[in-house]
Amino acid sequence: MHNVWQISHLDLTLRILLSALLGGLVGFEREWSNHAAGLRTHILVCIGSTAIMLLSIYGFSQFVNETNVRTDPARLAAQVISGIGFLGAGTIMRTGTTVSGLTTAASVWVVAAIGLCVGAGFFYCASLATFMVLVSLFVLNKWEKHMMRHRRNQEIIIKICDKPGVLGSIASRLGEQGIQIVNVKMKQEGTMEIAGVEEPVMELLFSLKVFQKEALIKAMERISSSGEILSMESKIGKLADPQLQSSHSV
Image 1 (spheres, rainbow, N blue to C red):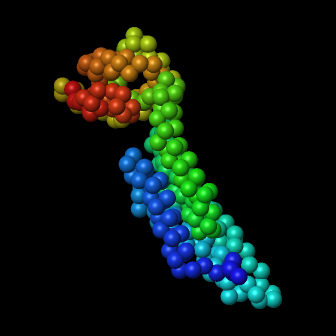
Image 2: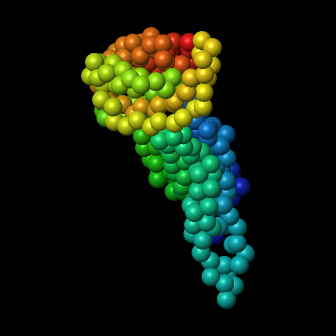
Image 3: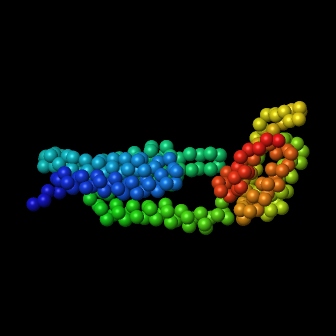
């Protein structure tokens, strides 16, 4: 009769290898997309959670027949789910109003769950979860970007000579291209010597609602031609012309 508290070395090896494969599939997508937690991180998390699940179920088999001992295979597994949060939190970064790394943190957490499923012999659930995670990361990511491209605000940072009318001129040129200004944050940056004169410098962070990529590119070209613009930086990735991504001096 098969003992549910015992596992062969072959079965244990297959579970560890399967967890490395499933975790590696998710990690490969994160590595391909240049995220903080990549292939090796996901493999390690999945193998580790599988090992803990195996330990929780089979590691204390010699005590199951003791009179005053109660075994709970889910006890160590519960600690994995709560404890993996520290690793996910390390992948989350905030830059200004932008938060990145949430998806990678979630992928690390779900890979731990996949590892627990493999360790418990719940192979179908582990395989199905891996498939759904890959669909979410590959397919739904592209669909989400396509559907939300007009709803997300774009950000540009402009350093200007703090003179009357400069902010209004920038707003006017954005408005000419049908670009809506959602928010503007202003920060004093000290002074800079321009043509032998000390001029006050201000940094402007614009949050914009853009409906056409070409409109923003045209607006940035017109803004950058002004003599009061010291530098311009875009936070919109491929939306702007590469030449406008770098700072330029007057």
